[in-house]
Image 1 (spheres, rainbow, N blue to C red):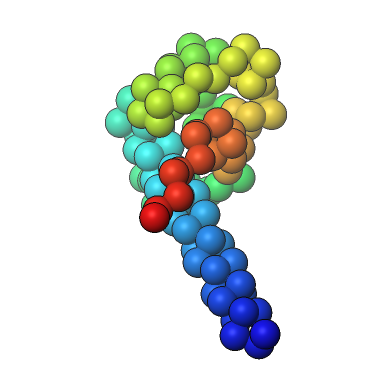
Image 2: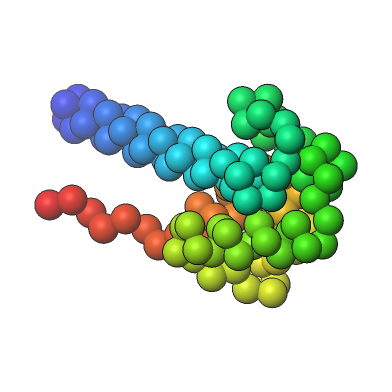
Length: 110
């Protein structure tokens, strides 16, 4: 029984590491989009996860639309009008969380 608990804990830790890796991957791409496609002048490594995309990086309404389109194209997701909200596009963390939620779950490895 103890070994079953160990396997379960190990499996949970692997899942947490996997989720963190996915979050980090999305985060890097969002920062790259901001710099390369939206011409934010702040280097990606200095962009804070919770910095306001509007106040800190100067995104305007067209910038948010471009970010939406770039996220849809790069991540293969559809961002509905309901999801295209100020809350979901407030910061890098918010955009990353939205993309994670919208991405299809990976198929289990057999």
